[in-house]
Amino acid sequence: MTSKHDPAGLKLRLAAAQRLRAVLGGEHFSPLSEKDLANGRDRALANRLVTTALVRQGQIDAMLVELLEKGLPPRSGTFEAVLRLSLAQLVFLPDIGAHSALFLAVEAVKRDPKARHLSGLMNAVLRRAQSNSARFGLMDDTLLIPEQFRAIWTKAYGAEAVESFAEALVEGAPLDLTLKDDEPELIAALGAQRLLHDSVRLLTRDRPVDALPFYAEGRWWVQDAASALPARLLAAAPGSAVLDLCAAPGGKTAQLLKAGYEVTALDNDASRLERLRANMTRLGYAPQVVLADAANYEPAQAFAGIVLDAPCSATGTFRRHPEVLWRRQPADIAGRARLQQALLTNALRCLAPGGSLVYCVCSLEPEEGEAQVDWALAALPGLELDPVRAEELPGLEQAVTSRGLVRTHPGMAPGGVAGGMDGFFVARFRRAE
Ligand SMILES: C[S@@+](CC[C@H](N)C(=O)[O-])C[C@H]1O[C@@H](n2cnc3c(N)ncnc32)[C@H](O)[C@@H]1O
Image (cartoon, rainbow, N blue to C red; front, side, top):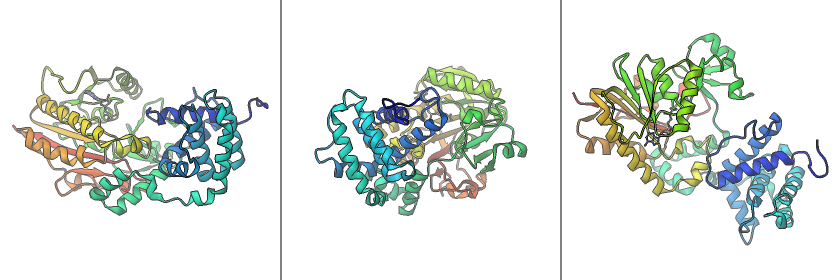
């Protein structure tokens, strides 16, 4: 029920502001769920506001510089989050209505004891923003991607690709699934389009994942088309024992089980392993599950194949997690690159002679991809590159480099289908006999 004290739309704005504030404070972005906002329409609108504020962060930063002469007031509770949401609405979501952006922003800060004294400033700033909204709406798209990534990616992938990344960021990621049962009726029931192999893309996203057909029956799992490539490239003998070294929540584990391997799924995060267990139960799979540190795990017997989906900067997932663009510093990337080297070193110890090792990261940073291959070949005796051939990835041949490495990015069209794919890097090695 709405009243003068609880105007319609305020609850969703407060929930959205709380989520945005948490992400700006360092949390990983995840959309609001039913627990946060029971009403589906409110939830969809709140998620749209938060996502737009994150996607447009670079442009909103520039607006804030212009609008707040003294900068953001310190220790001001939800003020910044509410302001960013309202700017996102005023400038980029005009269909929602300017009046509600102003009115609800002022009401929202009035409810926060730490920001209440700033309700006048909120009103004044948003009025100025409103009169400049047409100009702000034409703001330079190069602001969408921070300069440090723009420079690295332009060098690695070219200016045209980076332009397509900015478009992909604004567009957002479609929902891709990997099918357990690759049947045309299932694809039709899902309203999906085939991408590559057993990856399909939903043509519309009108319901939550667990409300899609055959979710409970475990006939598919969510997995971006790029993320589905590495496990397919493992070249171990059919039916052999393989190790998924950083396995949770289990997308690649499920693929390895579907391919008929005997799978050990290892991760060092107990709660993520719980998610993996639940996912495997839904899918009717039963891997061996191990809680251990991949940097020093010692198996009783070496494996014929290993997939190492290493922890990384995750910059290749920026369409779903725009916050990674504003959070990652070169020093974090160097730290992760060192961890990846420790994991690669131990992966080789766990691999039987002649065994196949697939290394992958959901990162666009050459330091975590191509440079790690150079490092591994120089530093790990007995490890050889097993080049991927373009014909192994029909429909995505352009992702295979002249060295036989795989590099995808959001400007690529898997199987010729629009909508992009995550940035991923994959290298396949073999341990010498
Ligand atoms: C990119 S995610 C893996 C995604 C998973 N392979 C999939 O396809 O669903 C990386 C995983 O590495 C795990 N991880 C990070 N450091 C680790 C370590 N030292 N040992 C084992 N697992 C680790 C994290 O808990 C996380 O689940």
